[in-house]
Length: 203
Image (cartoon, rainbow, N blue to C red):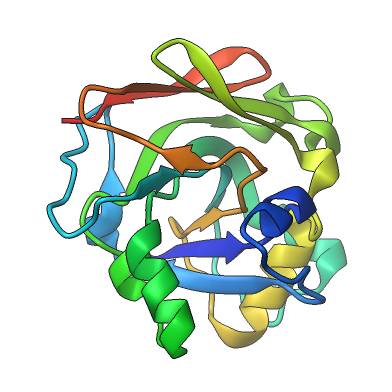
């Protein structure tokens, strides 16, 4: 199982970090040790002082695929969930300045909290799926898949040109604007269409 993350897939988020709007999907990967499931607490790592939340819709791949055409991509996932792509922004900034990879800032243990999954047929229009992150009861990020630069199907097709997708692979599809720091003691809750999908604490 691998975790594939799509970067800069919402224009407003790219702008808030002063990044260029991509003309094709940007992706990076996290190891399975990044997964944090079942509401387990996240322990703030000692190597960063600027840890940011990024709430994202997550797709779970249901069959093996390579060079998938966009019109068939919807057959490669049945379930949709919600996750957080934690980012050590201070480490990422240094890496970007030096032209180095982002792994230290993105792929560390526990950096991919993951909530429950539901069948995509229960969620209605996937092209206008509303989701939200609350921290300590306050809304921090609100997004809709209608603002995706690259659709779910486009992402699956593009990534599969380079990497064979396998059953159980997870694709984090990008975060909307509003990213910001988390602190020890924070309680994070993620929602899709008003339903709670994800909940955990920072310790």
